[in-house]
Image (tube, rainbow, N blue to C red; front, side):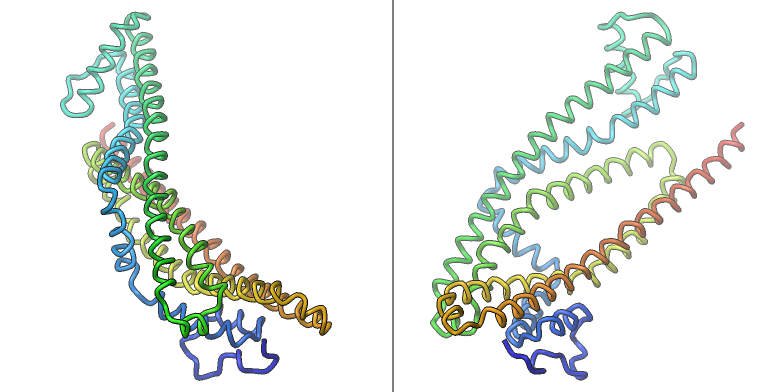
Length: 344
């Protein structure tokens, strides 16, 4: 590690982000600077292109992928049913149990409730409808629980198989490289690529992809149901989507350099630890322990600096999205109240 200014970005380095500058200032490590430059080249691709490359690994498990998508579609439909059924129940019970002959989803739910009412035989009139609707909603929740359990298991299996294939490809690629490659790439970075980065992709498949797919499908079902109920109010909510997308893009702009810097610093820390633990005998022999402690503290300070930037970006994202949601909800309530006065 150098104590000079070799690791400090110059004023001409306009491409360096504030997070990268802070990490280099803390570490004063020229090797970390090189790793950050390499990470920037690797990460410049558009997210869609990287996603397509990753999805190619799913082609080897088409059956499991199709099964997981089917379960996600069913779970998304089940997620939209309880609130819709509760709304129908309130309308029917407020109308003294006089069920309307409706078509579509509402008519289907009324038919199911009538069947529940006949099977339960609890009580005639409103009391029977309350029990029947309660039985319907409970059945949907139980079925959704089973579907969620199955979907999670199947998606986790898919993710683990994809990561296994990817990890084998990464290791095979490393094995095929010449000796010059190992002189320019620290061991810690290669270990991170083979273990930590592939583990991150496993979490992407098991968490982000599974929940994201389910949420997108749920959103599509929910919008379709909302449009059948009230078009103007639905359009008001849809108008908030561009704002939410903009908030996500803003988060990506600030968080991505922080994530990239964090990964680079982690790789450098692993390489530093591997070298110094392997050379611990020489460190003790030449009494360089105080210097090594200072070097490791500088790297951990750089890591903390990049993590703080990442956390800060996430910290303002959630309140921003909650604020947009609150404004959209307020607009719906205001317009809905005005429409209800017109119909009174």
